[in-house]
Amino acid sequence: MKPVLRLIVPAVVTLAVGFGLGRCHGVLTRGFHYEIRDAKTYGAGRDAVEWRYVTKSVGLAFLDPGTTELEYRGRLLFSAQRAFQENHPYAHDVQFDGEILQWDDGEFAYVLTIRPSRNEATPTAEDRGETLLGELQEK
Image (tube, rainbow, N blue to C red; front, side, top):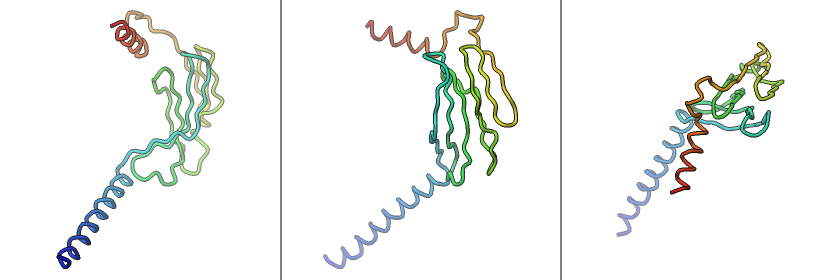
């Protein structure tokens, strides 16, 4: 019985270590990585714009310079990855008054006007979620 265990135990341990190392290799080389490094909110309530500085990469996120994103009501309005060892593009000087969004990324200055669609019959994604939640709570 002992000679059989001397063969089986090392084989099982080698197999488990091999699977573990293979999984780590797969995640590091082909996995999607998304990490929020910093986040700020401009505006108030539902009409707020969220600024984020994130690491977004496929594979090993080694020496990732970072990406800035601007999001409004679940819609990504701006996303730009910095050039390696450069200060731009990096969204800064963000201003939002509820209708006009302004920012600078070091190369260009942006001004974006946000207004409700003329087709008010189409609900937004948030409205659909609130309506569905309200219907579920009523039942």
